[in-house]
Length: 313
View 1 (cartoon, rainbow, N blue to C red):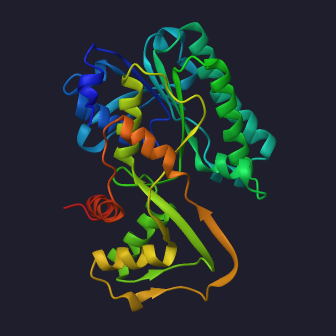
View 2: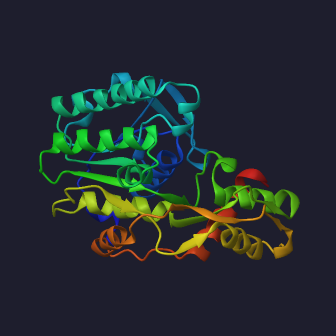
């Protein structure tokens, strides 16, 4: 694999927006690991408001308000734009307010880009954008992500300096909401009660990719000289797993009997599919000389992290 230390050995600067989420925390950990001591001098963090962020084993770090982001911050820097209102905010915001607030976030970043052009940028989109594009069941979050993709790719105007990645289901460390994701929820239930309760009555298909595999692919792609893909790429796993099978694999890893998995009778009337196109991911991994972790390794790594944060020594 092309190492980040080799790609970015010239002392380049990094900017991360939306640092408090799962991807943001994992990215900071990856940058700190690869850049070594003094990483804080090269990495600027931005969030919804200024604060000191506890990064666990990495200690604390200063987070600036996104409203303070300017061209001098982004000029010739590698920018990772992760800031975006989560889809759960649609529960308390109208779709028009949701779109407006996310557009204001993107406006702040695009204005900084125009004042000081980044060296290269990664825009974290979502598999929901692909769903909104191809599915009849369109949702406000996915449509808003499509708008974001279009805006940043239009700004790049074919320069090859922006990578838009549609992140699907991720695994591994730095999960910030253990009960909000199927994999970590199954793990928590197994650890707490030696059983798993599933609510889905439909066949539910997912594919998982390790968060560090995603970040290593992105970091390596940005650090290379060749042009980046001109359209959004899917960042997803290569093994499709149905939710019941995922629960069974988690249970097996933790020594919990399969009969301790409880699920309502499954109907065949509808299927919930959120898997992505692995061809995109494979091409990016091949370009980065990266071997993608298989699902078993992902499950174990996620278990190790959940154990550490849910039941610290």
